[in-house]
Image (cartoon, rainbow, N blue to C red; front, side):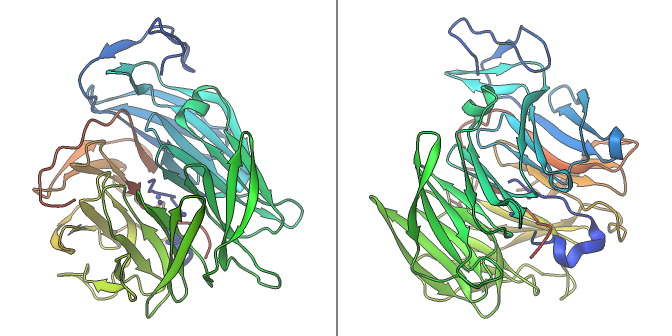
Length: 438
């Protein structure tokens, strides 16, 4: 329910629902990776990274790793169940493979990670760790921490699990917490806190935020935010604030020492997707069912609508969306196959380019987005053409990175070690994601 979208990858036949539902072990410099190799290379320059995508084929489903430097698929592994969403871990090393329909999450080590002053490159492989819980749906990453929210059912309640790349390296999570009432929710990591969706007495869906403080391997409940958020759906954070979508706008929360300040930024329609970046002061929001774009300025009382449908149909719907890792470009891929780029420095339409020759067929897998580690490029999966395209965001040029896969790729995530940010514009992380339910 951020990525990365990225994004969560629903089937297009349920579009109106799906669009909301995207290190070394020691000082010797060696480690044993899940793929089985004991040796790895030290690359002292930034790595181009690796793309991870999946094939949905029932009990024959697989996950693939494509190396962007070698321009080749270097590994593939059998999945226990078909993936329903794919995300990049908070540190970039792992792919988080959601299998919502089968109540589990598998972890894939992409084999590239930052170690002190250099990048280590090793063999990809599936982790021994599997996260278990009923209906894992919403993934969020923020400031080196990630959470999976399990919607649960009447018998189990819902839960969230908190982890980092370091804990995943040790085949473990940091902590988990079970909530009494099952619901379609979110858990936003924020340092020693997790801000989780809350269901008040008598309500049928999330309508507020509960606060949980980390104590070792468990959490202590620390009350709820005073501001209500009816129809809560979606959330994101930057360095100072966390924002959540509501029926009447956005709930904004800011940590002050050991407590939070919160307020509402109103909107004329339901905000059901929130996008944010550590390098961007403002937040972006998409409405449902109108799919209009709004800017959430933290000192404003009302959200500001931003035009994204330039030179396209007024009823165009975004199939995938996200912010680049440095918050300079907001991209939206619409249902005609056109990619729209919004420059967040001035919140204006930077341009658009046709990426998909044909719109996805009804009932087919939806396309997905994954940004390169430096944020200069976005990769777009093309299930209908069985390919993956590369788009350079400044020049708006497109090329095919992977062709003739022989199957419709489901999900897309970039893994690797991102280099330092180098500004190439005047603008100041997260992949957009779509969820299965509203």
